[in-house]
View (cartoon, rainbow, N blue to C red):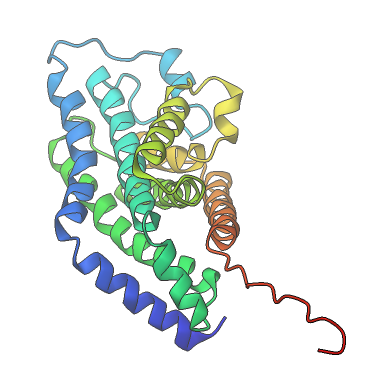
Amino acid sequence: MNGRRFRTSLLMQLREYRARALPLVMVALIPMGWWAVNFFSVPAEAEPVLPPELESFAAGIGPLVWPDPLEGNIWAMFSLLTGVAWAMGAAALFSVIGSGSRDRRLMLAGFHPREIMLARFLILLSIAIPVSLIPVVIIAGLSTLPPPNIGLVWLGLFFTAAVGAAIGLIVGSLLPRPLEGTILLIAIFSVEFSIPSSVPLRHYLPLYGPQAVFLAGRLTYEPILLIHVLRSLAWGVGLLAIAIVLWTWRVRIFQPSTARRPAGA
């Protein structure tokens, strides 16, 4: 990879996002809207979530701090994770849609699709920082269940944002049109977050690792971390590699074939 070309790609992505201030603000606020709807709509007398349901819900993340968190906290947590994944997936999707012709012009100037896509993902990671930090501040101030490890709460949200962004890049590379891409994103995230935690299949899906890191910081004092961090990193890197391959295929340039000249011409 050429460092100068990568920096140029990065600067071009920054200029593009600078002209999209309002969508970026909306991306940052979407997760909080989803969380607030669940957190503030559950009545104060709601029943707590008791074992064995809670043990199944938090399986594999370490000993629990609180034996009976309220339903409002539990469903709000899932809504927050879904909101972060969806917001970053949508941001990644629309960063790809409509950029094919521009990326082809860069390729004609000597750039590689890998450099362009890595620059795009790096910008998305920088957007993921405030998207994952804002909910942490709100949770710490409003939630009736104080997080025992606020750092892990943020890390889980950041991993969720990163994996969601990688999924969005894949969807944008496969279906570079807004309607079809948005429908596929909704299907992916809604299906994954709808599978109960007790179902073994959930453990092998892209967003399980980030969720487990988040829940470890949210519900436990002695979290089991390494396997979930490795899962998150492996899925993030693997999905990004798939997105690069798909985008390289999408923006490939066909060289016009030269007609064979007749012999003796």
